[in-house]
Length: 355
Ligand SMILES: *Cc1c(COP(=O)(O)O)cnc(C)c1O
Image 1 (cartoon, rainbow, N blue to C red):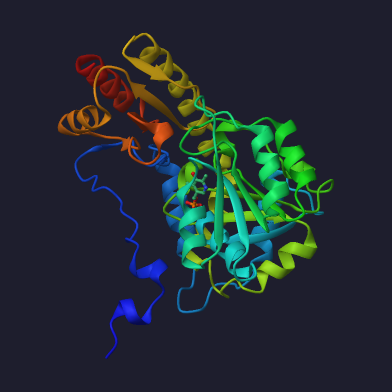
Image 2 (image 1 turned 180 degrees about the vertical axis):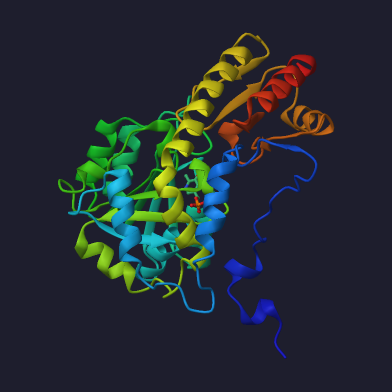
């Protein structure tokens, strides 16, 4: 019998399964989740609503009612076609699966890791342009690379993860103009940035916009959607697995869309907390903090190592993300997500003691 190394792609056997830190017993500020639960009355109504669900049947393979509801609640024009995914992660996979073998995919670095991970599984030619040291985008260099590499697809996380900044709209438009291929704007943090490129789809037929409900408070549901022109969305729909959104997800989403104001109010609370936390840390000369358009932010330690501070926070019961080894530009940087008021206060308190 052949071994995995002999039988499988090197991109698989040479890689590692996606690692998620064990957060049991810790204050979880590492994964951009919404820390709040639903009010008691909403929870009760939701449970009542689930009684109507029938799990013996397959879910709707193409839930038109749900799509219509999303359009109404999130103000999505009927002119834009919509593809539903099991989180945006699945949408990223669908996009890349559809490309011709060996296609070039372009993004910036550091950015969201799944673009590169899925590209590598599919033996696509994943290329990047490094951001500037202040995490702004080097516009000239990026546009030059579009000319030189002629990528089939470009991913731009907007705001970017892990740097939390928005690139200028003028730059995105230049990219859309310069690219003969598709340009995917990943708006995973739309609830916090409150800006969208979706209204540009009519002007740019190569534009696709991805959204997810994960960061707004439904990370466990696994639900994202992509907007674009009919011509493109119809093609990608062909390689979507028939029942990619399960019944529990569909029914829950349909329920909570009627109470979206609850989640949006939670997001606004997180925005206020974020700005307060950033101000607090900016008071310290030993920390460099970057502003944020998302529900997390990045900071660099000047006089201590990121490893040391990350470990000390953990010893104090607080889990944040150590991104210091993920990319040279992130040297000695840590990333923290916004939690509940009392959790954030404990984080600030611990940071004051540590640095
Ligand atoms: C979190 C994140 C995603 C993944 O979202 P899911 O819908 O949970 O799969 C996609 N893109 C970016 C930039 C993210 O930060």
